Every structure is written in C-alpha cells, then in structure tokens.
Image (cartoon, rainbow, N blue to C red; front, side, top):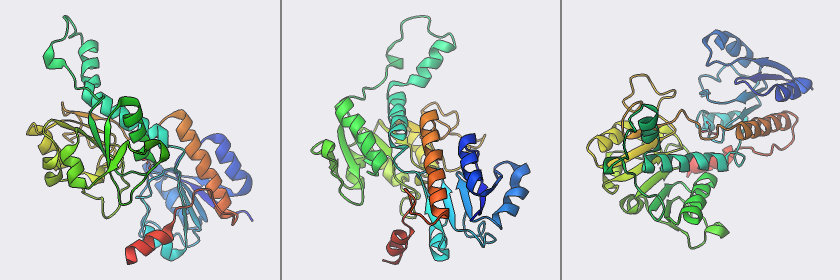
Length: 329
Ligand code: DGY
C-alpha cells in the first residue's frame, strides 16, 4: 500500500526516486523558512519521515497522528523525544556503523590539529608571515606516546582508540558504563572512572551520546581536574559541554587548546567567543561529512524507512524499549 512520506532533508536523487516508486513523497526542509508551512502540512498526513538535524519532540509531532516511522539520517537520536515515540508506538531508525570510521577520523584530525597547531600554522603561511624559520613560540606538542582519555566507548570511541593505540602508540583510557573488550584492543585500552581519566590524560576526547546523564557533563569541576596544559576534543554533541566552563579553562591558561566539531547551538552563533578563539579549532559539525559516508547514511536510512513502512524488520532500528526500561529503573 502506498503511504505518505515526508523527506525533511535533501537526499540523493536516486534514493528519492526509490522512495517515490513505493510511496507518495513530499520534500520539505523546515530549516528553510519558506518550506516550513509545507513541512507542517505534510507532517499531519505522514506515515514516514526521513531526514536529520531537526528537533522533533512531542510538541512538533503532536499533529502527526498517522506517523509510523522516523528514519533518521544520523547515528545520534537526541533530536527526538524517545519516551514519546515509544509511548506512541512510532518506530525510530538511525544509521550506526556506516559512519564510525569517518567520525573517528574527524576526532583524530582534531587531536592532530590542536596538538600540532595545524590551522594556526597554515594561516602563518597563507597570511605571508613565514619569512624566517619558525621559532619555539610556534612549536607544537607530540601526539604519539601521550595518554588519551576517551569519554564514551561505543563504536566511534573504539575506532578512535584503535587509531591512538595501534597507530600512535598512545596509552588509552576510556570511560564507559560497561567494559568493552574488542579483541584488537585487549591490553591496549583501560577502563577507568571519569575523574581518574581526566586527571591522567594529556588529551580528552568525547564520543558519548547526548542523554539526560551526559548533558552538561564537562563543567568547571571536570575541566579543573584535567592536567594543566591538556587538550580537550569534542566530536559528539555540544550540549555535553558547559561552554562557559570550557572557555574559562582555556582563558585561564589551564588548557592548552580545544578541538570542537559540535556546539551547544549550531550553526555556531556569530557572537560566540568560540568562533575565533585563538586556542580553539572549530569545525562546522563535519563528523560524518564525506561523500562516501553521507551517501552510505542516506542509503541505510532509505532502506530502514522502506522496510519499516512495509512491516519488515529494518536493519538499524533504535531500541526505544531499552531506553524505556532504563528510564523506569
Ligand atoms: C550523527 O550521525 O549523529 C551526526 O552527528 C550527524 O548529526
């Protein structure tokens, strides 16, 4: 049976055509003000949604009475009201796995960029200031051999650990609710408590999901626990960090640098001090943004959507029941 699908972020033409071959499709991206009325109108009739980067909470979905499935083109599901979806029996799908290595590359790129001051030194060349051999004031900091603490040890955290331990000879600590022992990291990554990891690491990288228990996790106390001269990297979600506390730690000289792919508000507001802070390497949320990976995410999300609408088990259904059980515990 043909159903109504609302595509709320552009997807490749061939994937759109695949959905159109089975269902009636409206494309409307509510991030574009001109498309908001069409988005709201389509929502009331939609059986399926596919897209990302739009907050869809209980209020936004109040009129979506026919909704059966949301297929998110993201691994993170923090834009959705999970208890509400569970209560209403709406299936949520996402895109784990296909973006793991690309996102770990981004986290590691931030570790390299901040430690070796790559952005600052590239500007030194492009702005014509390289007129003599550089002196100590522009030297960087080694990455190999340092201690890296990874907060969150899911697929992406483990992929960062592989790069660090196997490629760069780093000591790896990780903080995670449960112990994880991937065979290739046995003896190379040690689980510890948050405070211990913060005290011991030269570099702290966040790869946690945003949940009620991780929101605001990194505040003044946590930054103060980090080693003087340490580096902080966030490739997960901006709201895990209290940005004013991070700024204070950078400005006091306690932290050497921060590499940030994500921010509490995105796009980063024009007046955010993080935008041009000399100790911050800021990226526009590019964790998974390569041609290959974004294509793979859109492809998986399309398959998830079509399977769920057809009553088949989607390849990557988010387990809303497990969240409900945790919340009740
Ligand atoms: C994800 O997949 O969750 C990325 O951060 C894009 O939002």
